[in-house]
Length: 364
Image: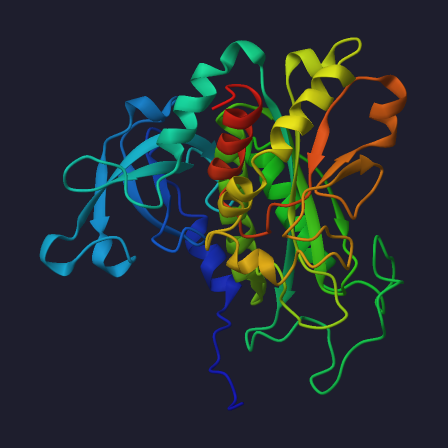
């Protein structure tokens, strides 16, 4: 591969300008949205002459949807409707990240706007208090898209020492991971942990517990922050569910789920009912669990490398080779939550949480 162009810039010069004082009533708002791939994010920034407290008070904006795979050039305006705001860990101060829904010229949701439908499901199931926790796995790559820290010719040693590992020969780019963790905490996202994963240069962080629609909001913004942090370090984040073929673990987004009834005494009864309902809608869930309706997960859900088979539904206690895992502590306490291990690392959190709620809570 030809040498990549130089992209590193002088951060000292950058810091000089970032220290310039601004009007205390001014804020820069970075509007964030999901593009037409259903997997990647876009953003742009505008000046706002007050400090927003809620998304509802912010103006609707628009962008060129023909450049994001969401519209034709002859009718390219797509609308951005603010739905959630977070403190901005990059610009800091009064500045905010603004998560947005996308709507077409006719004010109908774009094809990759699944938040509107998810919100409908969460509203209907509100009395059941659906809680989620999502475990986002990802891989860190060099700009040439080679796994960060791997030999440029050949492979690192086989899997075994890397999971939750310590030491420069076992983990790579921990500074990226720690910076992301801190940035999410600053923003107000409920990030609750992180760890090195089984494949070298692969990591995981967990978001939650979050209730209802906030799960999707927080996971998507945490991904935006992850990509932006990686940009600062000159590396690339991959959410590919099987980034390296062969005897290497893939990447998922295991989803922990519970209702109020599951969390109460003898909630195991409701957990078992939920698993029964999930077993009858396996294909429906597989289609909702990656952006290409199962095509990405086919490479990952093979029945090997701590996965179930994409073709079969299974459930078990403490079994990471099942579709649904009941944690050992939940089986012992007879209450708690279940873990759906099928969602891929590049899943849409809105689609995942919606289909779970519609199957388990609404029985639709």
